[in-house]
Image (tube, rainbow, N blue to C red):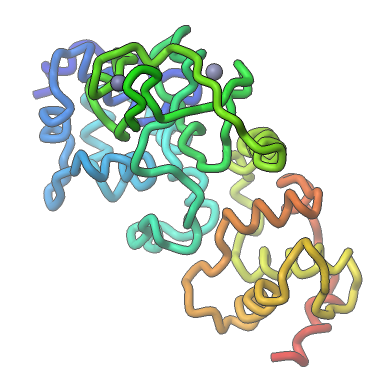
Length: 298
Ligand SMILES: [Zn+2]
Ligand SMILES: [Zn+2]
């Protein structure tokens, strides 16, 4: 079967794994269904309707080893062309296997049912970047135009995976998707979007030695929200709600029902409001006094 993939494209800068798979199909004249048949695991057939899972949890969705041997894809690329690298900073391999779209860790973080794209980028080079699926990243940093999932002609939302996407055309009316569209984005969403796209690489490239255990993140958040005060007290203010502080306290006390109770989406928004970069936040050292100061509360 490897013969079918005699043309082996190289993954492009920032490209998502599903976009790469589309190009493998086009270059080798096979359909996405045929490709799925080739790379299915012994217990699971990838499902077109849930194709996003390939970009989120490839190890759980497809036979990665087989894909690597069929396409010459560098296995180290997998962390870059899927969200697996990011997710693996926060939870173990075992927990990753149980992860789904409604898991607290990644809730509301990614767009999963539709394909986002930058018409300007598609004009230059037809492939789909992984970062476009981050829900709160709303514009393309290279072209400074809104990302969209809509066809400029028929207005229909493009699905996550469809052969037409590989040609840069609408899955319903076959019009080109490269025509720039204008959407109004409110100022706050735009500012957050720009902050997030600047932070994203740092988040994805966190050093493996970085402490990302949720107890440590929750403690740091409480420390940062309290203006680095060495004694903890529940804060009032716009940056963090009382409810969220109590949730963080439950996590620190190990009483949170979720395996990973800190949603990345809320963590990122909180850091933005507090004006902390990813790098600054993860390099904070928590004073021992601070950790001791709320032990009495448990
Ligand atoms: Zn662009
Ligand atoms: Zn269309």
